[in-house]
Length: 151
Image 1 (cartoon, rainbow, N blue to C red):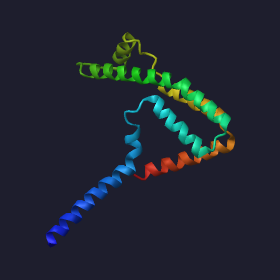
Image 2 (cartoon, rainbow, N blue to C red):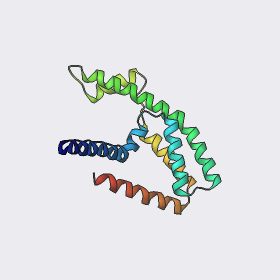
Image 3 (cartoon, rainbow, N blue to C red):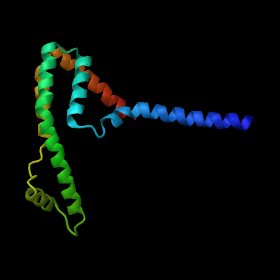
Image 4 (cartoon, rainbow, N blue to C red):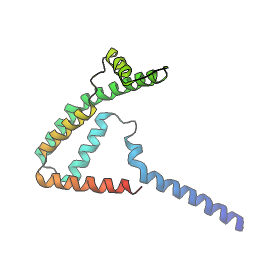
């Protein structure tokens, strides 16, 4: 009987630990494999809740999501193509920055500006928010960064 209790306790600890870890890391799993529109909608919904957006701000944010979704989708597809090219170049005998740039140019992918697209979206989002909402968002981002630094 004592052995059965220990087995039960061990199974309980493993299952409870697995559930705890899954819940703690669920935001990473939730975003993995989602299309851009769903990710941006999720972020917009979260911003609406956490920043107390007005009706006008919500409409403007929805318009941004609609505007940027196809652009980000295109950037993701181009990034995937660029990674395939990079991996192909990596298997060759010699590789340099120039050889990668030539390969990307041949594929029509020489202008991959992910950061520029991100900065453009963030600038447009910034224009929607009030100074108080911007401060609130920055505070939440700092807390988020601190949380991830502790890991």
